[in-house]
Length: 613
Ligand SMILES: Cc1cc2nc3c(=O)[nH]c(=O)nc-3n(C[C@H](O)[C@H](O)[C@H](O)COP(=O)(O)O)c2cc1C
Image (cartoon, rainbow, N blue to C red; front, side):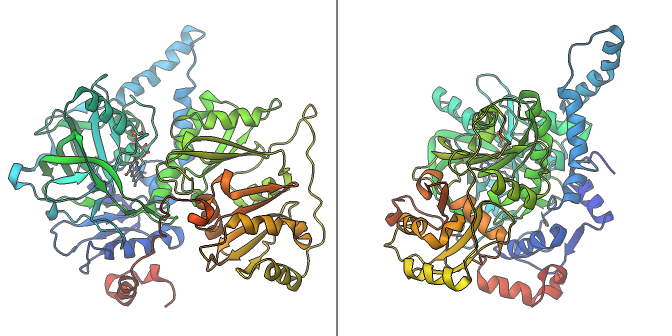
């Protein structure tokens, strides 16, 4: 397997050789149609294929999507046979201790030399500047920037490597922050308040200076991945890319700003952000599967647009998981395990289920050593870089295989005492969290499903009685409220049984009222966890149910705990629930586009992703 691609073109060739690329030759529109096709491919078994749209209407440049969108392709992108083996390579470096002998020191020299090889290098040969536009010549409408979803505020650059430099330390940052195209030479700059780009922006704001920014689109895959990785502030993402590639990233000076960009990028946008200027950005169909709401963000003014002679425009589509970004996140989960292990050696593994859209839940397997150990790790997670956004943290013993989701679920549901193993606290929340009453800060839940030691108080177990007949449950629900309709008890062999219940919201009845009534029903006592879901949700689609629970629940407001049992309101919230913020819509493709793509499946060559008609 190739471990380093000079540029995106080389990666595309390798994908094609491996049978992982589909060339779509028929004309397509960058307005929704590419999204619709990419969404079908992403959700096909095995993540479909990378798609190269060769003929995009109104643009002369081809578009690449879904290039990272499967286990095989993310491994190809990062030049590794498995993400775990890449993590092991990193583990060797982070565990270097002081040498105990001269021999050991000599043994470390090759590693030291290897480290030097990761450092980015300057070059004067900049393929990304084969074509240069400046000033009035700049026109973003020549790029096939995608309007991804129907309610999007406009076209968005979705796979950009945004490069900035700290005014204080001079250190470079590369982060992936989407850009909404406003006109021929300005875009939004959507760095969330917690991110390094935003931190550097504040430095320029305080100093009253314009901030130079460069954006590389279509870099070699290691650089693209590195821009998404949650590295500590001040550590250059180009070093991580160099480590992954086992070769330095070649950087070229920009033509109009004092920054450097990956020399082999397909396109580069150069310019500046004026710290005093903010503009409304969004909405945008986001990776949560919901639209992220309109917000004020800085504006990026372009001073140059450069590109290779025959560039490919790289893009991604995010939306309800699984999508391509799930694989970028999977890489982070695996690669960052050794780094987490340095700080917390008792953490043996961790898993961010896709339904949790990265920030909503993390499951960790630990070697428990003392009472309260699990709580300590929860606190550590909530204080750790971007992991601190995690709304829920669930801990299990290290013997539990996190690669087996059903087993993890059963372990948690079998073990936890719902009175003493759930811990509610508060902390920072991801900008994209929509369930908390206030943005950016709110409730979090820790679930301790590790085994209890002899020196800890034993758990109280819920006595699960006989499951009542369906008719009895149905009658009980009807007697509770006419708004409760369907129900389903997942067939799990666990002590804490679940009952999923459909709730047709009427805009007047708070979920909490129904939760209270339901917990009082004697017939339902055999179920320790009652979950309310919006009517219309297929209660047997467990991935959908988990996605709703992880996204829609504010742990303090929406979880009612009584007598060792829980009622969880995972419905959409509004004023009657005390939720005064806007609630975002689920992302859905425009039916006419979906219909037209399905009709054109043969012409587009995508029948294999379309499923039965
Ligand atoms: C496809 C994709 C799009 C993203 N878009 C954004 C975005 O618009 N804003 C943002 O703050 N983070 C976004 N992220 C997450 C950041 O790239 C990620 O948190 C990264 O670590 C930020 O880098 P930083 O720590 O250097 O700021 C995106 C990630 C991916 C994979």
